[in-house]
Amino acid sequence: MSGHSKWSTIKRKKEANDARRGSLFTRLAREISIAAREAGGDPESNFALRLAVDRARLANMPKDNIERAIHRGTGEDKEGTTFEQVTYEAFAPHGIALLIEMVTDNRNRSVADLRHHITKAGGNLAEAGAVLWQFKRKAYFAVAAAGVDQDKLFEAAVEAGAEDVIIGPEDIEIQAPVAAFKAINERLKAMGIKPSEANLHMMPSSVVTLPPGDALQVMRMVEALEEVDDVQAVYSNLDVTEEAVALIEPA
Image 1 (cartoon, rainbow, N blue to C red):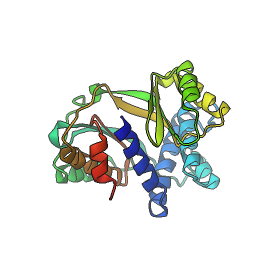
Image 2: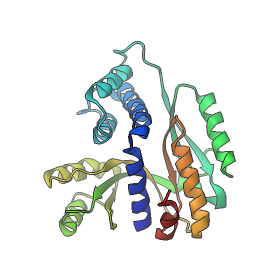
Image 3: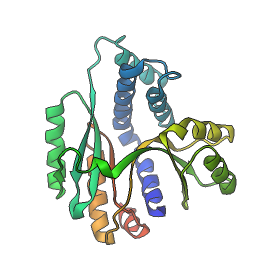
């Protein structure tokens, strides 16, 4: 998993670039609006909204943008576009399973755009249920390893309900049941630790290891899909090794 941790770090650094921040803010605003529409505009009582707002704050999204997104979701902003969240299943080259979460105001446009990118990369869309069974939603945290007492963090995370704590060279990743998200988040805050990522991820029940060159092909496809306007997140069952990350890192 250390390769996966390193790849995640590389992608977060790319997201921090000014050239990509506008696109990231758009995706975060859509996520906030949908959460507010489904369960109200109070982050204290709406778990999904609190997650979305926390992600926006981690990305340094302006407070006014966050509030406007909440108002669009609750209907206070009558001019806001109506979005829906939809998940597509696909196969990348070499049989790697993909889950692609999208937020769109036009499902037909989005699936056509998605099919184009998947086919171009040598993959194909899958029937509903063909991929989903291989994944389970879990709480996920990433913490910068520098300056952190790893033993104390490990102990605190496990006590709060973590199933796995993966210590990498740059990041420490924590995986847990969804129900443990709040407890782990509060424990991190009490320790003065601000995670670089705190979210719910679709985690594969098992991973597939490919030769580095083949893995690189899949990783390029995932990164290309993440650039598609309506795509919120892409999950795969690829085992991202250190060797594969070494091939993609110079780019």
